[in-house]
Amino acid sequence: MPEGLKNASGKGFNRKPTVYVLDSTALIAGQTDFSRKEFVTTPSVILEVMHDESVKNVVEVAVESGQLEVSSPSEESIKEVEELAASTGDMARLSRTDLDVLALALEKSRAGLEVVVISDDYSVQNLARHMAIRTVGMIHPGIRKRITWITYCPVCRAEYGVSNLSVCAKCGAELKRRPAK
Figure 1: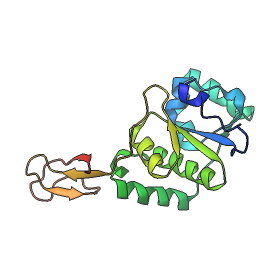
Figure 2: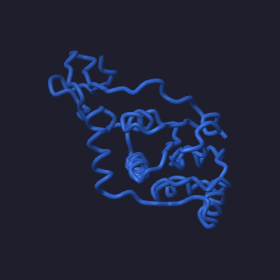
Figure 3: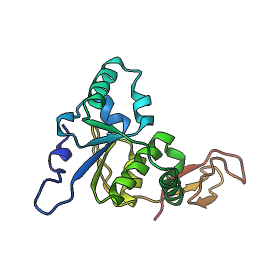
Figure 4: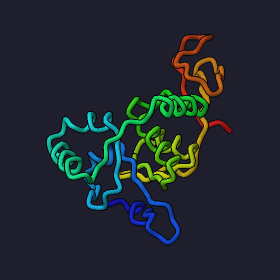
């Protein structure tokens, strides 16, 4: 179990219950102890990991025994996360599954739970930080600070600020991104 999980438990006095929202990495890494019954994920995460037979078996047992809850976030929550991702410059790096995970985390947080997203995806971690939701990496350490990204052209140096463009409107080169100052 990652070190961050050991200290992230919400079982202290006067603390909200903690729920861990799992990204695909958490299931693929296989280091999740489902005996704690505090885990939730989305159907899209389940679909991503079911190609691996060993992961499939563990996930099926965890779901069937009630140790892993599978829940779909609402379209409203997904749209809210998409809008935030667009405002931080993370949208281009997030998959639909990533958006589902973050939307589910947002819903659990609003339901009064302490939420920890378990993911090694830095864009997921960054957006979770912008949403004031804690994150823990399974294999890699988590991000150190939250970032808002700006896009720029490495050829003509045009800057587009926070943008979901992928090609420069001036010269047609592929845009890159860097942290805003």
